[in-house]
Amino acid sequence: MELIDGNNTAAQIVAELKAEVATISGRKPCLALVRVGDDPASVSYVKKKDQTAAEIGITSRVILPPVSTTQAELLALIDQLNADLSVDGILVQSPLPKHIDELTVFRRVSPQKDVDGFHTLNLGKVAQEDDSGFVACTPAGIMELIVRSGVKLSGKHVVVLGRSLIVGKPIALLAMQRKPFANATVTVCHSQTADLPSITRQADVLIAAIGKPEFVTADMVKPGAVVIDVGINRVPDATKKTGYRLTGDVHFPSVAPLCTKITPVPGGVGPMTVAMLMKNTLKAWRLAHA
Ligand code: L34
Image 1 (cartoon, protein in one colour):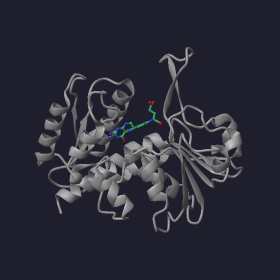
Image 2 (spheres, helix red, strand yellow):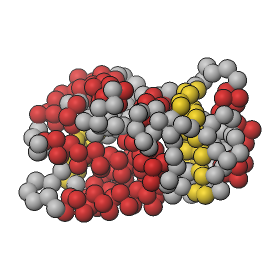
Image 3 (cartoon, protein in one colour):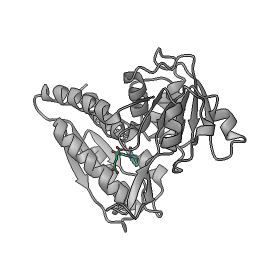
Image 4 (tube, protein in one colour):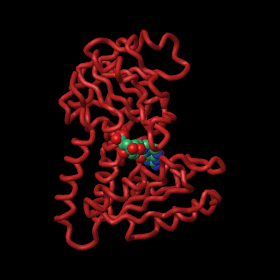
């Protein structure tokens, strides 16, 4: 069993981006990070995005509307950022408070600044295999991690657990693209799938993105499989200072010994999400300068 090191791979990408940004004379790429309210996980993720941007030389603008912000106010903020020529990329951190409709918000971001890749147009471009748009950061990070760790998908059976807009759907589309590093046969499973373990056991590459802590157990994995754990779950743990521990969607202790390769949590897909956001921001800057 080999660990796929997301921290290391993300650091490599960050170094590459830093070198690219260093060659830019004049206005540097600028990323607007919008976080509504104080969801504890969002606070930590947005902080990491802000810090990584600074490390690369990307300007970031963190905007923190209160949890009481109305949908109309948030849409007005996005309109303002869309129109702002000094802003290349816009990210609205999810989850949003319940009184705000996420899809409406995601669709309001200009497709040219949609570094999250959640806009209808950018998701559609993934389906059409048009690389001119933005791929959502977590699925993009998973593909990058797969490619850079030497896992070949072509002809393999990739099973995706989860059908979310943010991970499940786009990663399924990416893995089946007609590209040398993709070309997989893809099955998508979800909460209504009958006899799920019989399907996951067929996976050469299993991508777990269902948001249920330690859901994938040894009986669900074929020996020799590659397992990508996308889950980032905070589970109460009284022995920790923070009061919680992080765990993935995979029961790591029992599954890891079966695998050829597996991503850990933390230190797997999470850091790649942040790295790909930075890559998308540089792409948005290039679009604005084309
Ligand atoms: N709009 N909302 C929008 N875009 C996104 O791409 C995200 N996501 C997900 C949640 N909401 C979003 C993120 O940024 C998940 N996510 C994210 C980002 C970073 C990390 C995990 C998830 C990460 O860096 N994880 C570290 C551990 C961090 C910790 O200690 O809490 C890791 O090693 O996995």
